[in-house]
Length: 258
Image (cartoon, rainbow, N blue to C red):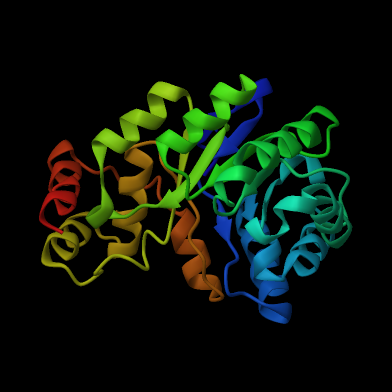
């Protein structure tokens, strides 16, 4: 549950995060409270999700020290021209003086790629965001940012699932020192696939747990989302079983077969 990867400055990013996409108002608050109660220490939100105030209130009401909760939010590309104002709004809604990670949700227009990235770096330098990164960027776009500023994103949050497994793309990120966060890993997977159900039966776990554990075997950060407490608990309970190298290879093969 505490497995993590180191970001710049030595900050630990928990490999298991709680996603909040499509969770609004009461459901967002209650789900984040449940996740923190169960043991999650990484919560992922975004300006686009319109639930930052509920996420912030849940963190505050949880009784868990703010320093112990890794909070990510994201900048909408439509807000690129006033990124600082957007972050200040996020911080007010989250009721915190900083976020642990601030991402550009999607690449803005080409002319705005570097200026937007410079705004994120400025926010990091001022302590408003402990780390900054991107989401849905290509390695070439990451290189453009790094070449222009001398500083690469800490993280790239991209879709990742067994069917989308791309070892070459993963290596491109590793070579650049960019952590991959995978999203929609369960949403984009057929959890009734016989390979997954067979592995799950052998280990006495759910197919969702198999898929999430597979991400961890590749050191890919996961962001499962649910509003049901039992699923929230199951999605973080991934240390009681080990996938064999054969299991991992069989799931990797989804990326070649679709």
